[in-house]
Image 1 (cartoon, one colour):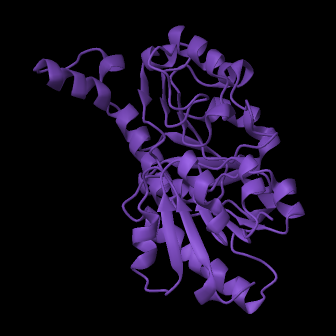
Image 2 (tube, rainbow, N blue to C red):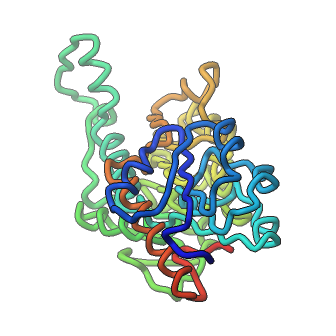
Length: 321
């Protein structure tokens, strides 16, 4: 790989101010930023390193003869054709862990919002309605202390959420691909195959798992049927981990108490989608990972990987290819 000071780095994102965060490090490396697929296609030929996520298109490989490293801005890398990238001798790294704190905190916030009935409170505020005290227990706010939190995917995000749950005095159980790797903050850990066995125990089921062949559609009608009628589902993983039609049926029938969805199968969620109107559901627009430190966190990973390439290290941080 050529000397660092001769590299040109392209930052491609429609919103994140990545070049600004990179320039603040005074690296001396040339860089530019684009904000659309059209701009990226026009200028990718200038880049030795590309920092990108949602604007990526695998057809761009044919326009990028100089490209040596793709640093994904996101933890997920499903959008990249790894084999095609490998065949061209390009390296690919994810941003795994870049927003682990933010996503775990967002998941905990959603749990608390469901327990404390915050959407109802916001609606009452908008209507200038002062809700009276409730005699009906089912209409009262709840506490999370003593409740059981099931974390599906006890990795970096799931482990942080497990520790947050414990701070709220919850019982925390979880699943992960390799249970021998340890509970990562939970009271109990099991394999992914044990999910259906654990579901009846949970008051809150939170998805923090990556999207894989094993986790696609992991919450379907069979899984929902195993949940308590008073349980809630929270998804801060990927929309495709949930079979949305099955979840909609479970919510409309009252089979489960509610849901909080940060991700959905089709994003942006179309204005006419029935998902917007699901009962007892909070929707946040795939913003769990949003943090004012996001750009700085990505640049930390990028600079680490540039240094590894310069030194001839065999592996990258969060290496995919």
